[in-house]
Amino acid sequence: NATDFGDMTRQGFSSSGTSDGIRGVYAGGYQQPQSAFVNNIDFITFATAGNAQDFGDTSAPSCHLAGGSSRTRGVYMGASIPSPGISNVIQFVTIQSAGNTTDFGDCTVPRKEAAGASNSTRMIAAGGDAPNTNTEVNLIEFITMASTGNATDFGDLTVVRSRLGGISNSTRGVFLK
Image (cartoon, rainbow, N blue to C red; front, side, top):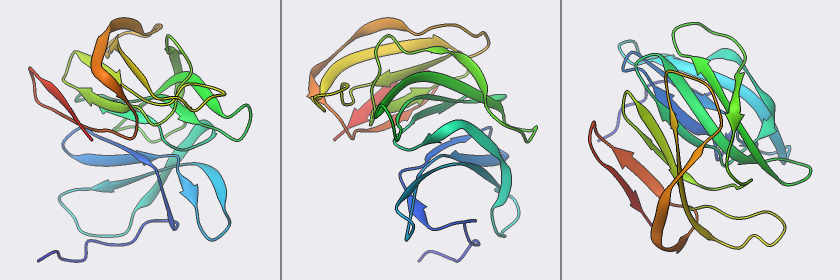
């Protein structure tokens, strides 16, 4: 059975999590009962049960970000935002240094609800919803975690999908629906 670890700093859903193995960092989300996008970034330390603590803020209130991490950085790609609705922003944090996100670059297209997977070198984001139409896409794109810059096309999913789950190890990323 699960054991109580602590409490989040706010109620909500659709945050994106990253980790360096010591800290877990989650960014953005949709807060209830206020029904509002948030720009909060919070963290926990895995070795010590306790409540989440404030880490900093994302560049804008957002949810449905694709997340990936290395042993140093947590990276967030794309998002749902209040206006114009979908973002192409890529932003990152240094996980052991609390603070706000820094601009990393841009996704190849704006999208929300993509899934992220990563190893220590690359992060890939797959699927998601396209702007204006909320049509699912099959796009996979990647970034190199240690540098900054725009995403590059990696290939396509076998079918269009959004709201995927992404998992990975050092050699393979898998996306589940």
